[in-house]
Length: 104
Image (tube, rainbow, N blue to C red; front, top):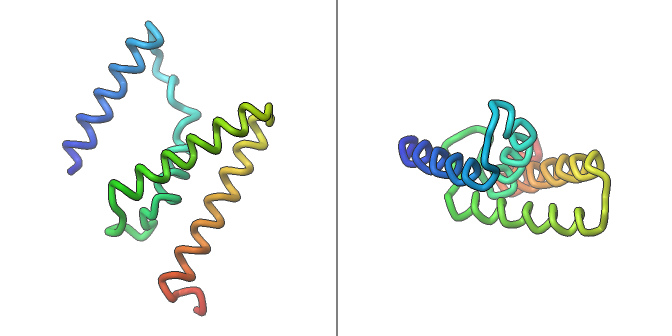
């Protein structure tokens, strides 16, 4: 599974390089928070061992739609990050309550 993830990441890097024409080492620094948010929204457990690729894909699609809507509405980027944080908190709370650990 890790090999597949590495291969897909390298293919994605090649596609971005072809699109942009050049790339530097800091190209994806702003994307780590978005990737983390997409994984958490998709149902990937922070404890490990739980989650599906379909769930992660749904998280990516949801965040892509949110990003596009907020960009079209000309929302400043710091508010977009704040909204991502609120979405992460909400999804963590829902996951905790759904697992039955919310009462502890």
